[in-house]
Every structure is written in C-alpha cells, then in structure tokens.
Length: 487
Image 1 (cartoon, rainbow, N blue to C red):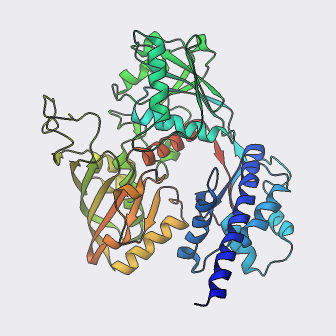
Image 2 (image 1 turned 90 degrees about the vertical axis):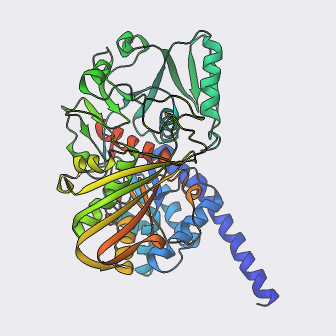
Image 3 (image 1 turned 120 degrees about the vertical axis):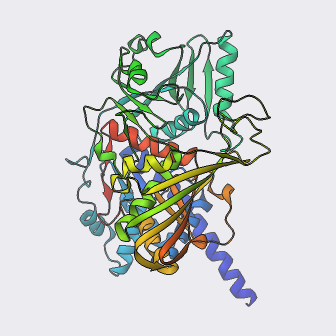
C-alpha cells in the first residue's frame, strides 16, 4: 500500500470521527427534547462515544453485507432533528440503508413518509403511559444495576421515576448513606457509574444525575407508608429474594402508596413468571404481583422459543455454567445448601437449577421436555447455558446459525437474543451486554436432529435490562419502533 493510500485511509477515518462527533449532540437532543431513542440495528446510540458509534456502524456489515458509514447516517440524524417528532425508538441505521437503497433524494420527504406516525409531534398510538413511581426494595447487585439503568433512561423521560430505595436500618445513617453511594459509584465488575451522586444526610437522599432518591430504612415492608414521602401508586421492585410467594410479596402492595410488586427472582405458587419478549403480554392490569423469573430462564427461553418455532424441540438438557453469587461462601463454611458452603473462589460447585422447569412456565409447549443442572464457577459475572437438544426437524450448523443470527437482528426477540461469531470471545467480553442471552455461533453443533447451542449471558446486567422491560410493561410504558421493518 502506497504512502498516499495510507494517508487517504487515515484521513477518511478522521473525517468519519468528525461526523460521529457532530452526531452525538444531535442524538442527545432527539433523546432529551423529543424522547426519540436513536438506535443502530437495535443498538442504542444514546450516550455512546465516537468510537462506539463507529463500531456500531461497522456492525451493520454482518447484517447487510456492507459497512454502513457515518457519511450515510449523519444526514438522516440531522434531518430528524429538524422534524417535530413524537416519542419513539428510531433505527437510524435501517433508515439510512433504506434511503441509500432507494437511491437517495430528499431525505426530509423520505423521513416524513417512513416516520409519519410521529412527525409533527405526539400522535395517537405513538407512545403510552403516565409517570410511574418506582421503589427499589433492596440495594444489592441487582438493585444497584437497576438504579443505573433507571437513571440512565430518565434523561429521555421514559416515565419511570426512581423515587426511593429501601434498605435495612443501620446505626449510623451518615456512614450508611456514604457506603450506599460508594457502592453505586464504583463497581468492580461493571466499572464506575456514569454520572454524579450527592449525599444529603439530613434529608436522607441520594441525588443521582439530578434525580432525588429517598433512602428509606425499614426491616419489613409493613413498616413503610410511602405516601409519607410523596410516593403514590408505586411499583415496588423486590431485589431481596426474601419473599417469593403471594403472601410474602403481598406485604409490599398492602403498603400505602404502593400498587404493584415485581420480584427479581423466580416466583412461587400462582405468581406469573415473566420472560420479557416471550410472555410479557400475559401481564394484565389485575396482576399486582409479577416475577421476572431468573437470569438463566431469561437467557434460555428466547432461544428455546426461536428454536421450537422453527425446528420443534423434542427434548433436551440445559447445563448452566454460572458465575458465583453472593449466597455462596468466600471460603469453606457452613451453608444450608449442598456444596455451596465450599469456597466459591476456589471451586467449581455442582448445584441445582430450576431454570429448565421454569422455562416451561413461560413456554408451556416445553412442559416435561427439559432437564437441567448447574455448575458454579470462580468468576464474578457472566454465565453460559448449554442447550443440548433433540429437534423434530433436521438441520446443520450453517442453517441453524443463520436462523439464530436472523432472529437476533430482525425479529420480535431482537432485544433478547444477541449473536456473536468470533473464535476469540470469552466471558468478560459480555460484561454489560443488554440482551438476555448471546448465541456463540462458533460453538454451535448441529447434525440432523441433534443440536447443541451455547448461550452466554450477563447474569447481572442483561437480566436487569429484562427486569426494566417488564417494569415498563407493568407501568403501561411503550414506544413505537420505527421504521416499521424494525423489530
């Protein structure tokens, strides 16, 4: 390659960087002023860096066969800002590809046609929902990640308002508040919080990126009257796992100011176990208590649903290789559970999982067809589910991977199923992934009626994103996804 060619390549890169830099404030304006979430083939562009935006453009080559350039998308984003848009999720990548394929022309006229439901402001059916108060009951691993996502989304006015967190009473409130803020501010797995946190000891609040969040100290749900804090009709998200049945979780909805409860663990009895993207439409106005099932159930059910729809699942076994969790011992000590008393940091620990049986609650057609087991391994986050299946229809590796790739890109499961086709990825590469599960194409085995599919999942953050989606469903918060081809 000649020196002149090298210089041209570098100049092109710098030019693309400059356009991406110009896109960032435009994307932010769409988000904060119009509640328009700009995406690139399902990947959010909100609060992303220049390099991240360029990488998301490059990702399009896996779908369309050609790399999309910011030269193509910048005019689309700029034109979007000049329209008076109502709230929606708008895939600017798909719009740019569509505009390019039609040969260009008048970009404003093109956008007015493709986005007619939201052009000129808030149109009927563009979005729905009223502001909903949210309380996080418990502030552990999942509670703090839910807080991060809720605060991040507050910039677009997504109608979910984090009003309070509830923790057990401590002797020194000042020290406790500082510790809570510190744990939210710094995370060994997920990195630093993107923003500012101000502690007000007298008011017992944390102001997180401008959102004032009350810290309520209570040992039991029945001790709380949320109306004392100006909280009404709230959804209480229980992250403690202390109560999993209707009687226990019913304590939340009996509190003044609370209307519904969402459990971030598998529910027992008649409580609906919901995997968003699969059976979330089963939530009705009458459901006051709902479960978000488990992280493993959320990871495997969308993939199982897609496979069952296309090939039919005759039977199978789910083996979970799971990161250790807080209920295990750091070093050998007494534990009521079998094997979990042995050091989590030093051992692979064979244990049970209810994910295979729980999958049938979201997918009744799989009732009695799956078995399951689990191995806890010495890493703090990101797990894997291995689906060893007998299928009704025959297939091969190429056909199976191509189908799952398409499901991850342009289907109803776009937010649930991700897809990776790299020989180099390892578990840490999926920290912070917002999908319920990620299919590892290089590990897929398929021969006739037999298939083995490997599914990675961030058992903390990916699961938390699923919980937020259920929270939106319970709160009647929804947005159009445009263009209409977008999933």
